[in-house]
Length: 263
Image (cartoon, rainbow, N blue to C red):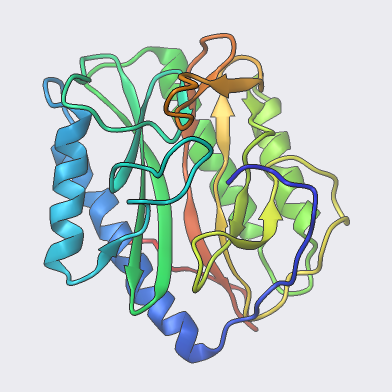
């Protein structure tokens, strides 16, 4: 989700709504887990997209990303598959072949009875560099540390701050132009969730919020740009450095939080 300055109404979810989001999210988590055995050297990013779309349809659900409106054209695939310096929104292609040493981020969204689940994960293809391995581990660690802060009564800035600190303490950077988001009957709802910020700032987290938290972390500068103005979708690092992406859909409960996309 691209960062916009305006804060709109935040929709708290009922137990019934959270159950539907839970079902959609569980499907997303299962898909990302199964991709551990699918992603390997020699397959194309289109192969990944075909696998995901078939799996979603086998569950009688709908892909959430297919046809989403963008700046230039609707998103043409069911899955975002981003390789190496591609940050997010990579368009699957039959001509993009994964090779040993690549890292590939896969973002999956599902719709179940009008409710959305959304998550992402970065995979290693064969043997990867020590920098790439560290980047993947730190990105996932920052997500997990952010989730620990997602408690009723805490501030959103507490989540953003711990993600930023975890990443920057090892010399990496968090992407600032794209952020996490609320989720429910729409893929992108308020509030926006930056991966940078100050503690004790921002809105208060409340039971009933459902949020998609998603650190996007670069090995180099935080600056990003659009790779191809013709499609307007694929976002890459400006300096060509590697990027990793992890995401979970989270429900804030009275007792803490529940990771809905966790398998």
